[in-house]
Length: 260
Image (cartoon, rainbow, N blue to C red; front, side, top):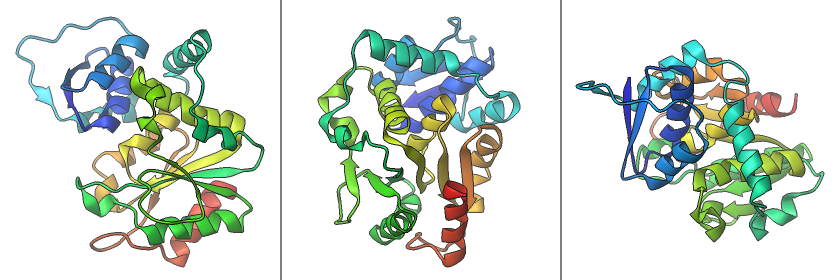
C-alpha cells in the first residue's frame, strides 16, 4: 500500500506512521509537507522501504484497515520512547502558556475546531461552553485548545503549536507537550469533535481521547480505528447540518466516559 500525504493532512501522519510500523507493505511519501517528512525521518522506527514500481497511490483512509487488523497495545512504544528520550537529551522546555497547567487539579482538554474543510465537524462556542460547564460541575478545569475566537471561562492554550518551540520537530513536540499535561498536569482526557489532530495522543501515548461524530462520519474510518486503539473512544452523536449543542443524553454519556 502506497500512501501520499500532502500539506493540510496533519492527522494523516499519525495514521500513516501507525500503519507503516504495523505493516511492512505500507510505504509513505510526503507532498509539500515538511513537518510530516521530518517526523518520519526522526522518530518513526522501521526499515527503509522503497516504493514499489507502478504501485497506485491508495487513499490515506486505507490505513484504517491496517490499524483495525494489526494494532496492539504498545506497538508504537518505540516512537513514544524516542520522543521522550529526545526531549530529555535536548532539554525540551514547554512554552510559558503550559506552566500554569502543571498542577494536581484535574483537567480536561477541549479541542475547538474551526475549519473550512468539512465544516460540519467544527465546534461552536455553545458546544465548548457546554463541555466547559460539565467539567466545572465535576470539579475539573477545562483547557481550551484551538482558535481563540470567543470568550469563555476556560484556560486557553490557543493554537499553542505556533510558538517558536515547535519550529523544529513540530509534530513530535506537539505530542510530547500534550503528554506532559497528562503526566504532570493531571489531565483526564481530550474531548472534541472528530479531528485527526487528536488521534496521535491515544495512538502513541495511550491517553484517553473522546471524539464526537455521527455514525455516517465515523463509520468509514474512525469506527475501525477506535475499535482497535485503547483509549480512543468514539461517542456517537447525531445531528443535521452543523453540531450546535449536545442534548442531555449525549452530555451524560460523555460524563460517564471521562469521570466514571
